[in-house]
Image (cartoon, rainbow, N blue to C red; front, side, top):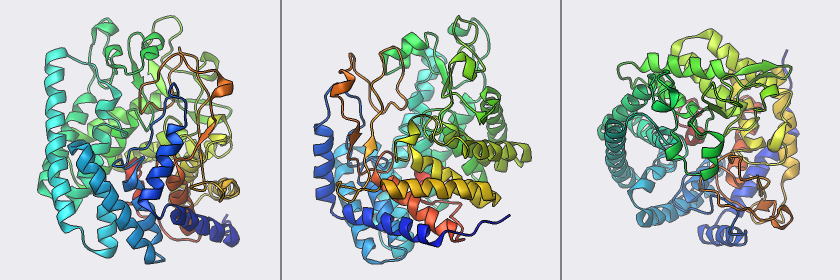
Length: 481
């Protein structure tokens, strides 16, 4: 059964994406407004802040939106260039770790409008050298200290999965040093797919991406996971490396053991999922089995509810499984991912995503996965759920605010519970809930207005029948393409 595209909704969604881009047209004004917004928050409240050189929460991500809008209106290309120039200046101050965040927006802009030859070459050179040194450091640490990682070693947000995606982009455009550095990353991630036997496991083999308690950034994590844990989610968990390995395999960048590593990771993710009356779901994190209160296979009864959002929820976990199924030519794996998203379409408003419009925790992240999966499967039910969610995001736009959409801040959590997404350590004690603001005006890609606008633009085009790019789209920032 086909569903007719709601033309008026598509027009409005596209128009709002451009209105957000207009609100983000001046890098200096955007940066000033973002800094003021975060400065107004209580010092005790954990947040990512404004990081101008960051792809996810700074100028590079905003440049992606203007480049996207320039597909239909060339004047936005100059705005993308302005944000890229601001990003280059910020990266110069931030150092080599930030340079890789320039690669995706510069490459997409160059593909559409030319230029940036020197910027891309120099950024690729610096990024490749930085990542190779980081991999060497991690390998040396493993040899000296044995197993045990921090999720920031390998994740999408700050680790090798996210950094590897920039290398993959450059390697696909013929950059040999980046291809060599990508090989280092892939070999490291293949390595952590093998079981390890840390002392905390009493000799029992556990997945090699085990996060050691002494590597936690948030002290209360040690209380909840005294022997460490296994992170499942797309933002900080093993689904990030799984997505990178699958994308690299599809592009032909392969190292020994790559397919087997994809299989081990995907099978483990599938094994810790559970099915209830709402469909297939996953916990965000899994503790060691065997201690009181710990469960290897969480369920609603054991107090480990699933979330719908991208960072730790079904929408973020199912898409890497779909990519893995494609890499492995495993139709059961892709079918499982499709069924998980179909189930999600019936429980979109579970949990905090019902309030937040953003990509990371909120409705935009769910909508984008629905659109991606609907484009692959053609399922009418997915398009209908996407339409409903797009209507909600359209209704949530507020032109009186600085950027059109505001990030909904998570409620203050008791000290014993971990945050949903830890871009910075969470201090304690927390301020009384009544004194904490519930929103902040964030312009960025991951949590802010830019991400919502990009999702609305893609929804509008895909709903009208245009195929989304399978490789190197803006959502490569989340390892979705």
